[in-house]
Image (cartoon, rainbow, N blue to C red; front, side, top):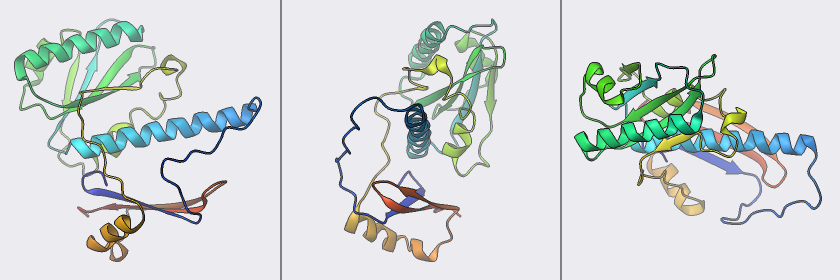
Length: 222
């Protein structure tokens, strides 16, 4: 459960919490490495989407931050972004944020940030940013801010410049999505009468250790 979005996974085979399958002996094949990479990207996207849903709503600020120069050094860009956050903290003290990294076609770094900052004019935020262009986008029409934000990062998660690095920056202490299993999950399904609701998305797939997995996503606001 991530705020008003509820995801239900039904596994054909019993799953054990905290249990991980042992690694295969020997070197992995190129196909196995690619599969693990794809799975890692998928998990990262899901984690970010759920963090955003658990902490932000459509009355949050959605901000795009770009550099006036063609800054392609990610370490330097992240340093400047963190200084920007420090300047915001000096003015607003307490607020939450999560920013995803995106690379422009020319290779330049820029950020898409969602935050619960109070009202601030675009010009004033640009003066605090000090690095270039700022755009505040109205997202009051969006009922799934997590899905809205990760669409900006789909193509970039596999970028080699993010290899071994976090693909997002966020404030400490963000709320985590709530996860339930077994009987507790069944009670939640019954409490929200999910079986009577139409899912906004559904899919199924086969896993070596899970068997068939049925996935349902519900938006309690629809």
